[in-house]
Length: 46
Image 1 (spheres, rainbow, N blue to C red):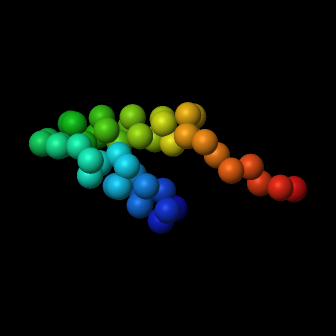
Image 2: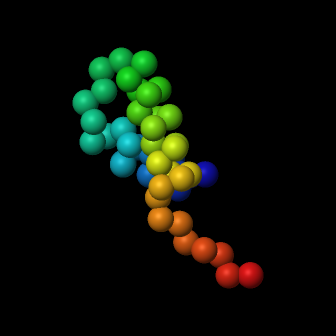
Image 3: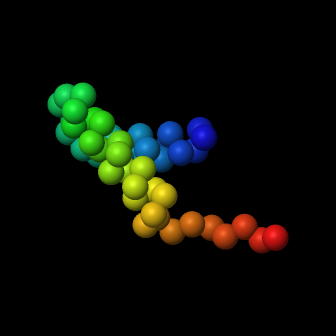
């Protein structure tokens, strides 16, 4: 979980000039979609 929040801040929020709460929420939702659907994932070996 800590890793996710670190990625969210460094990749999803800090690089952008965010000026209000609505923009922050939009950016977070956009990053969560990216993180879960399009971001390359490591496969666990079973």
